[in-house]
Length: 363
Ligand SMILES: C[S@@+](CC[C@H](N)C(=O)[O-])C[C@H]1O[C@@H](n2cnc3c(N)ncnc32)[C@H](O)[C@@H]1O
Image (cartoon, rainbow, N blue to C red):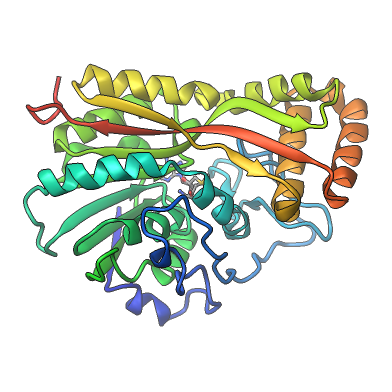
């Protein structure tokens, strides 16, 4: 495990890591505390270099395949061999950040604010609320949530990808809802092996778009660690496996089914992750509340919609190669409708808030 501490990312603006602007909060989320969010897209990270002669990477569950010439990547090509887990492209995480911000359920944040005000927990060495963001990517969750919570906060950003952690530190949130200081530290770690020790002193655990890329055992481990820490967990944007496309096409259902099956490769829970997490937290005595957090994609999000479509259909074809000819026709037509502003898509997600019971939540 590698730890790096920074006060609002300052240490990370120096040194050898990417020098591009990276995601940053600018004047964004803080201007809309408590709202559903129309946060401005952060300035983008530098393009990810990819060797031209490198074979395309696999499709990554939930984020689609790698690129054709001229397309944006949703995942980075592996640099360290086939045994390395696929790595998310910061461009993809940036592209989805506005839709994610608009989708997350503000109702759960209201509950959380009340809970944190009533049970602030012991202030850590940094003072204030200590938040662990698991699978932080480029730090989208912190940029969304920190400006919606009051009081000083120290965010501990966990991810296994050091490249994404760098962007997360550079683009870390600057201030709480009431203007209090927000500091950040990054931790390179496998969240699937989270131990209670890793959450020592935590006031809150968060994650966004993470649960569906975990196995049941990993979700159980996560819930157990949160229960041992006795803190709430806000786990946003888990896919539900339901997609509505308007206008409809006869192939929609088959693509959806194949994509959902692809998400469950290698024992991952995909659309079953939310229910598994709810059960795991409930077993540990937590009160679990769910709220819908759908992406609503339309003419205003053509770039995201097109990239999501390529990934969605690409994963479906990787799962069921016999779909290829029909899926190619389908994708071409869907992309044309998207470009013409004639396609609307609802990708259903759900957010989960788990509040520990009176005894701290342990079963
Ligand atoms: C879909 S991305 C979401 C990133 C970010 N939370 C967001 O909402 O933009 C999933 C993230 O989880 C990280 N991740 C997946 N499995 C992980 C694991 N076992 N340990 C640590 N990080 C993991 C990936 O590297 C990636 O950054």
